Length: 451
Image (cartoon, rainbow, N blue to C red):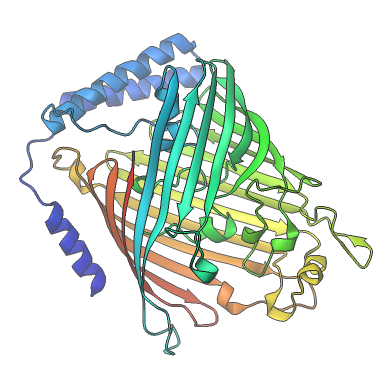
C-alpha cells in the first residue's frame, strides 16, 4: 500500500486551481517550426538559417512559459544543457567572461523491506543520507576557451561510514578550446560519454529517488577519467571522442568493473583506452545513438610471468523520445573482459566470486508530466515506471561459477513533483528479485535541486 499512498500524498500536495492551457496557436507554431528545422537539418541547410529557426522556437517557447507563469520572472529557469552536460553543469557556457558557480544536491531516505524475496529476514536498515552535495565552478577566459569543473562531497563527511564512507572528489575538471563554431577539443578529467546517467546525473533531470541499476553496475556512473579528445555537432548529429587512461583490473570483482575506475587520481596509464559517442538529434524530441569504451586494464600487472591485458569492451545503444510532457527511454549495455581467469588470480577470487567475462543490462522507462494537460506556473507532477534486467556475471571463465544473486530484475514505479524546474521531491517503490531469491524490495524518498 505504500506506493498508492505516496502517489496520493504527493498529488494532493501539488494540487491547485489550474488556469486555462497555454495558447494552442503558439504550440502549433512551435510544432511547425520544429518540423521545418528537422527537414532543413536533414537537407544540410546552412547554419545561419538553422540558427534563426532555433531562435524563433526559443522565443515562442518563452511566450508559452510566460503565459503559464503569469509573467513571473523572479525564478531562474535552468539553462538548456550543453551536449553531454546537465543544466547546472552548463552554466559556464552562458557566461561572456569570468566566473560561474552552480551545483546540485540530494538527500535520500531508504526503507528496505524487512523480508527478502525468499521470506528470510533481510536484516537491512533504514537510512537517511545527504547523498551528494556538488559545486560546479567554471571560468570563461574568452569566447573560445573555458574551464569547467565539478567537486562532489558524498555522504556528508569524509570521516565516517565504513564501506559507505563519504569522500570528496573531483568529478570532472577540463579545459575546453573551441576554435570552430560546431567543434572543439577538451583536456583534463572528463566524464566518459556512455549511456544517459553518466553525463546527466543532476537529480531534477532523472526519474527515481535512486539512480538506475544498469547505469550503476554495468555502466559504472559516474565515471570520470583523465584524457583528451574532440567533440562537435553537424547535420543533426552530436559526437564526442576521447583518449583516456584505462581501467585497472586490480579493482575488478564479481559485481563488475566499477571498482576498477581510477577517477583521475594518479591514474596508471600504461594501458590507455578510447571512448566515443554518436547521437542523432535531428528530429524534435528524439535522441538515438550509441557509445563505446575499449582498452586494456592490466596496467602491466603479471601473474606467474603472464602479462594481464584484461581488454574491456563496453558498448551501449540508447534511445529517448520526448513530446509534450511524455518521455520514453530505453538503453541496452553489454561488456566483455578479456583474461578474466588471470584477473581472478590477480585479485584472489574463486568459485562464485569470479569476475564476469561478459556482462549485460537493459532498461525501459516511461514518464508523463500530468501538468502539461492543465498547466499551472512551473509545476510538474511526473509519475514514471521502469523495468531493468542485468547480470554482471552473464558469463564466467571455465572452472568458475556464477552467483545467482547477481542475475537481477528490478521494477521501479513512483512520482516526481517539481514546484520549479530546479527543485524536485521524489518517491518510489522498487521490487527487486534475483535467481538466488535474495532480493529485497525498497521504499525511497528524496529531495534534490540544481542551480
